[in-house]
Length: 130
Image 1 (tube, helix red, strand yellow):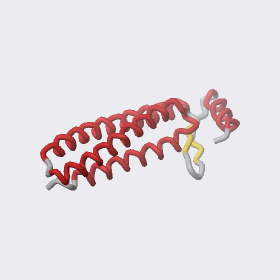
Image 2 (cartoon, one colour):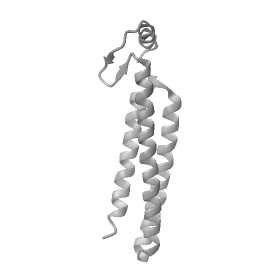
Image 3 (cartoon, helix red, strand yellow):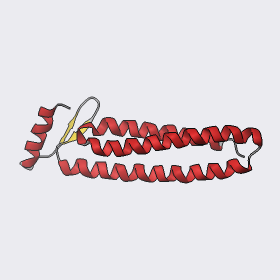
Image 4 (tube, helix red, strand yellow):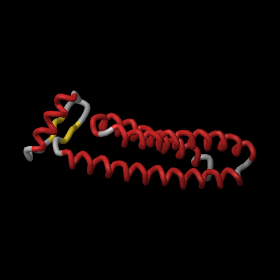
């Protein structure tokens, strides 16, 4: 979104005009408070998902201890990969928050994709157990 359009939205919102401009790839609310609330709610949801993945990673580590030797080696590699992906997702969430509202939609899509990738990785790893 161009800076001119953003400036226009800020000016209009100062006059009590709020609404939604819908582009091909994004939705931007003229009401700044709405964007802030949406971003905060999203951040809280993503933080909760990351914490859940952290618990699942610990469960996977515990299961790997009791696994057969050949499975244990594969699981350790998967656990390391999942840990790296989780840390990258956490860094992305922190970066997303610092980027501000102008990159909100793009960052949100990247964050959701990163967490979906983590979910698939956990499903694959846990599928090794009955």
